[in-house]
Image (cartoon, rainbow, N blue to C red; front, side, top):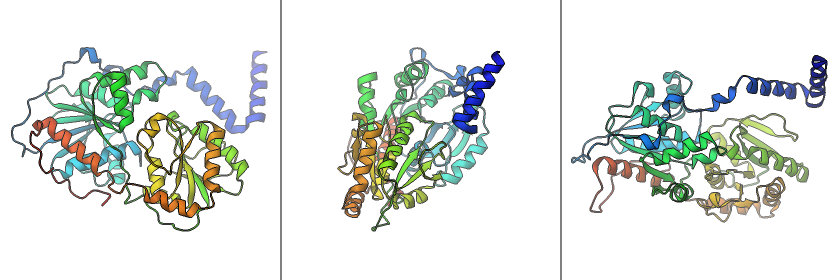
Amino acid sequence: MTMLRRSAKALRVLKDDGVLGFAQRLARYAYTSLGAAMLTEPLCDGDIADSAQLDLAVPSTYQDRSKRLTVGWVIIPPSAGSGGHTTLFRMVEAVERAGHRCVLFLYDRYGGDASHFEATIRQWWPDVRAEVRDVHGGIGGVDAVIASSWDTAHVIARYGRHPMRRLYFIQDYEPYFYARGSMYSLAEDTYRFGFRSIALGEMVADLLRSEIGIAPDVTEFGCDTSVYKMTNHGERTGVVVYARPEVPRRGYWLARLALEEFHRMHPDIQIHVYGTKVKGLSFPATQHGRLTPAELNDLYNQSIAGFAMSFTNISLVAEEMLAAGVIPVVNDSRYSRADLANPHVAWAAPTPHGLAKALSAAVSRPDREENARAAAGSVRSFGWTKAQADVVRIVEEEAYGAVLESGPSKVLGKDEGD
């Protein structure tokens, strides 16, 4: 009888949801029954540190400020075009241009080949000259080492035991990536490790102050206006959405529901989806998958407006859209507003109707071309120069000590936005 009931249920799923829905049900069953949820844990058990038990050696500062530093950066394996890695590698390039040597220490929870990931780095970030090593060989031979995410902070505490300066480049308040539980707590604990913290933006800085009680250094977001810029000064025809269904903070489910409603309101307007090629859409859409920055700028220049969703720190997508003349529709929150003060952003209630209404208003304006030009002109043109200069200054200050007298800062070299 049990087998008959299971067979009948399977047939109903096939009838109602099709082959794809049936396959998804099987995958979910296998995921649960095999305990595959453990694979989402980004650290091996032995690589977890505890702030209450850390005793990490720190060297004295150097007296000779002309000494060339060796700076380590601990990273997880990058995927092609990863936004977080792109921002971090801008900082690596700045430190290299300042005359220092950089080493990337790769940590892969699943034991991947470091040379494979190095090939991705060389292809997608060709200006990064840093040596690439597997972190399991230890973190040594560096004057300073920088964590790039909460899991890499644990890795530094585990593998970076020799005397060195330890810093933490924090692009988001990462406990918020998770429900309240183990990973939330392990991420939160890294802010108590005593590493010198560099917060990217006021949202992160404010939470570090209020939730953890530390006072980070703070730098600001940039936008690569050498890539993201307005090239189409005429008619625009579509809307665009960045799809990352597997990343809850990017709000894909809400965006999809809002696009369903938007399509009912504007069936003639083309919808473009990039990032991930998604399945099961109930409306027609052109799916672009992963795009290079130049290809993405071309897509933006076809578009009137788009979703730039983020439920933690503001997404870089919003200002990149603005630079190309696209009106970004952003879920309204104090976190998003903390680092995106621009009058051309369409703030929307984070509901399907609220988002669809804001997107509809953007495409219905009679002055769309003029509005696109104004949006592009509102974006700051100095790129990432400020953040890069801040990171170089802070790293050097950690190694050499604070400069007591003000003076001209070290020339960083040509910024990618020049």
